Image (cartoon, rainbow, N blue to C red; front, side):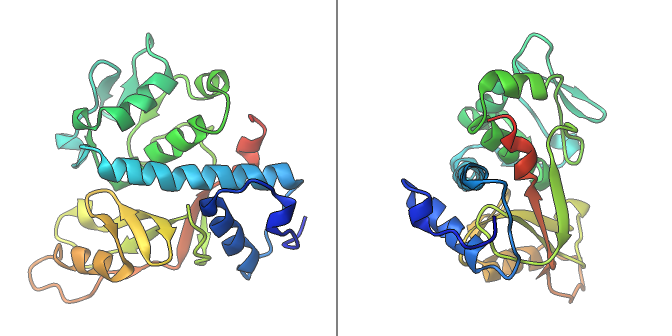
Length: 236
């Protein structure tokens, strides 16, 4: 299916889904889907990514490097590679806890994106499927389950729910080398540790975290990261 659909082909879209649909349709990239149901699923997941980014922003979860990080010990065990879910706990319950009990958690920006992805998938597939897919579960940075399908490639389509990276070349602390951010809507991004900000505000925030004498400004990389929605659609 090419970009020839219209909202009337997809009844009962929410305003957020309509905005995402319009962005996909107006993109120079030719997005193709097996059927309208697959397209509708992508719209739902993207909508949940946006909603869960806002939930994380409103939570009490803190920003920290791994050495100072914490996950709720009722669910998680800290290992040298990340936080491993206790065998007695369900992945679905553990992911929900992160978004309802934020004060028990602190992590950096890559982990925040992975957690937003997990929560958004949980919101859009059957819970038993989620628990089978993501058990056992290890979380930290780029240590995530093989069944969390995502891809990064060049280009900026500005589709709400995409993840973009603001690079800070003159960083002082490596944890502020850059910021992984969810594109919420036109000129609004969520970055854990920075908040809901505009493009310029994100740049300004990162520029305050440069090393002494650093002069090169942070900037938005020409790349996008997103889930492979078609892979996840199988589990709906």
